[in-house]
Amino acid sequence: MKVKRNSEIRCPECGGKVSFTMWSFLDSDLNIEETFALTSGSFFRHVCPKCGIRINVYHSVYFNDPRSRSFIRYIQTDQSDKEKDALVRRLADTVSEDGIPGYSFKVVFDPKEFIESVRNVRFKPAPSSFNQYRVS
Image (cartoon, rainbow, N blue to C red; front, side):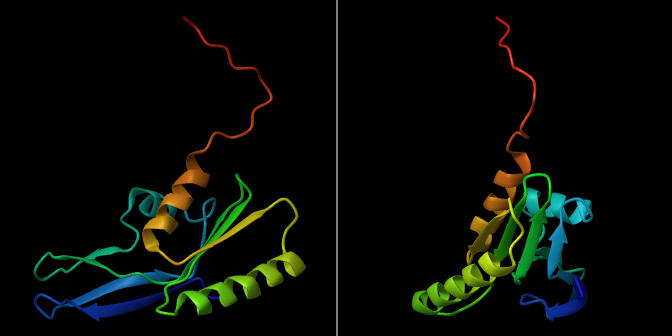
């Protein structure tokens, strides 16, 4: 599976060419810089080199976080809610048949919800084997 490809769009402000990389799969252990960009909110944001305008380019992407055993899929689509529900059901069936034991799986259709979901799995405390004590 190809995990990234180069792409370009025209700036809506000046018509300049904006080149960027579209990722289809991110693994938080392997793609550290991209994961940071995602959690900081800049993953989908690109800047026109000609006029400096910021452009959000949303695209579908899978995100895997082995530490929290979480898999999140963001799907960029203009489908109706009914079509989205059918898609989620198909994906849920696939995951239950082919899924990885102990992993959680989430599908989102809103880029802000995707970013927030990734932040939640990346920054939730890891389970620990020691007791935490409060010092007063």
